[in-house]
Image (cartoon, rainbow, N blue to C red; front, side, top):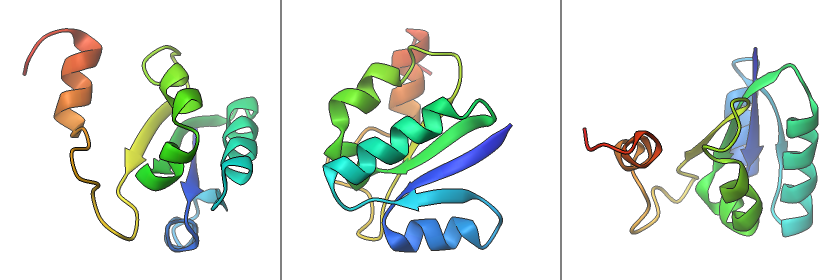
Amino acid sequence: MKYYVIGDEDAVLGFGMVGVRGAAASTEKEAQEAFTQALDDGDIGIIIITEETADLIRPTVDRYVFTRQFPLIVEIPGRSGRREGGKTLRDMVNAAIGIKL
């Protein structure tokens, strides 16, 4: 199972330094193409996407979060930090399993 990162150049470069492939995306079209490519690759088990990039294609990302077994989609803060009012990992887990931890 492999990781794949989609986000700004800093995120892709940083993850690339530890061997994670990825694609930089700054427009909706680039983000959609990278996301589709990652979904089509059967070796990718975890897609790491920055919050800003996920917001560019929010309906698509939301359609796959918690609806498919693989790949797991994980949103991380981008270079500007966590967005205001964003869900924490705990919030997402609580929503996924239906109970409050």
